[in-house]
Image (tube, rainbow, N blue to C red; front, side, top):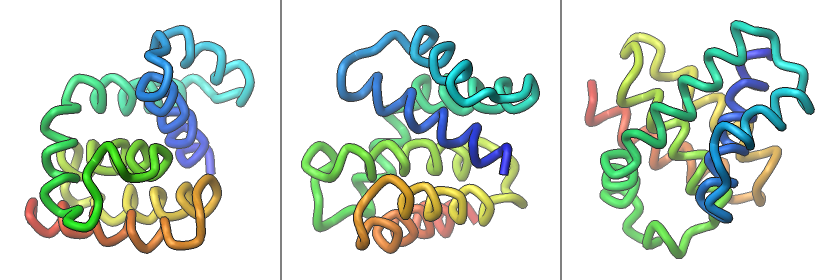
Length: 133
């Protein structure tokens, strides 16, 4: 559960950066205090945030490639930013763990988005994962 909380914090920070050009560090520090993450989870969350933001062009290109029904900037900003975090993990972290970030992204989508989002997030991230295998 603590890794999920770390992923949720990462999603919230990336969402704030996307929506209101928030300073990632300031948003992160605020959310870490609010959610009470442990040190190892803080480090994991910050890695997701910085990795996602540093590789945003590549990540967005992959999401756009497989999202034929929705242009990246027309899709729900919640879904877009959940997928950005999940895609970062799938593309840039240990290949053997690829199912975990997808499952976590689905659960985060169920919590923060609408009923159809979990299936949409799953489909896009699964296609990105398939390309990497």
